[in-house]
Image 1 (cartoon, rainbow, N blue to C red):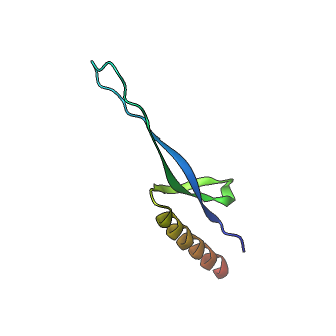
Image 2: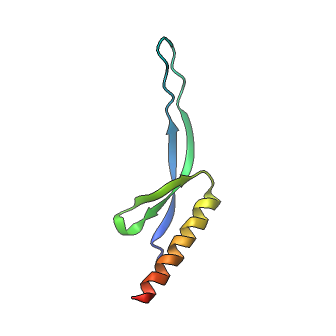
Image 3: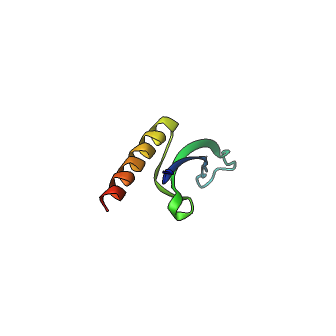
Amino acid sequence: MEDIFVVKRCNKISVQGRRAGEVSQQQPIAAIWYRIADTRTGGGFIGDGYERIEDAMRECRRLNAASSRGSRKV
């Protein structure tokens, strides 16, 4: 059976604002994070993002296991 939830790597851009009176603006900080996508909704993301892929994969496995247990009860 195909997994319902999959981990996707996403760009994470933190835009830093500036205070009144500051002349220059700091550069945005570019990083990556990992989100869990629901394949049933066309790839819509669920939950929070994860800094580490291991954390995202663990949660993804948990969600897939829970969804497969739920579908067997029906």
